Length: 190
Image (cartoon, rainbow, N blue to C red):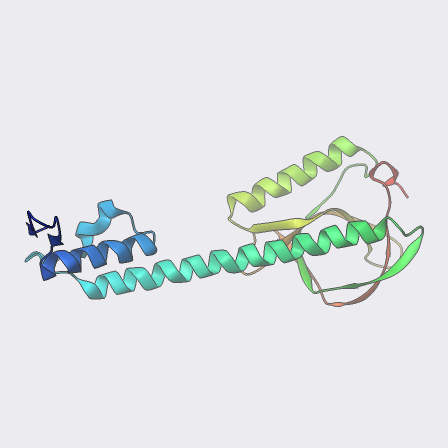
């Protein structure tokens, strides 16, 4: 404080000190480290509010993006858990409404019945996605598709939020009603 009243202990601050305190509070709210506080002062000691506002807007946009991704991840987790609970009651095929989603895919060249090979392939795909800052969701496994009516293509798949470039091929599944069937992991050959 610029002055402390000896009788009351009340602290008095100058306008410049109050402005500095306000700027520190803004930096804290925006998660701008206090060690960068001096970056927002001009050479004459005044505050560069325009730079602070620009940095604040950028930080707020980044936080919003992170919160949107977290919300999407939580929604995907909720859907995944609900499906797992529901799937326990099904034997054989069943119909399921599935929201639009995207999967990063890598061709799977090994025996689908070998659990170690599946885990190794999924770990490799996960590392590729993680190294490229792709947001990974919860659905993962092997996808079997008939590409020409006879031959079956097997891909290792992990569900992703596809709002940034992906280093692998991406399979977009449109929303709709799908015929599904679950297999135990040790029955992948089926």
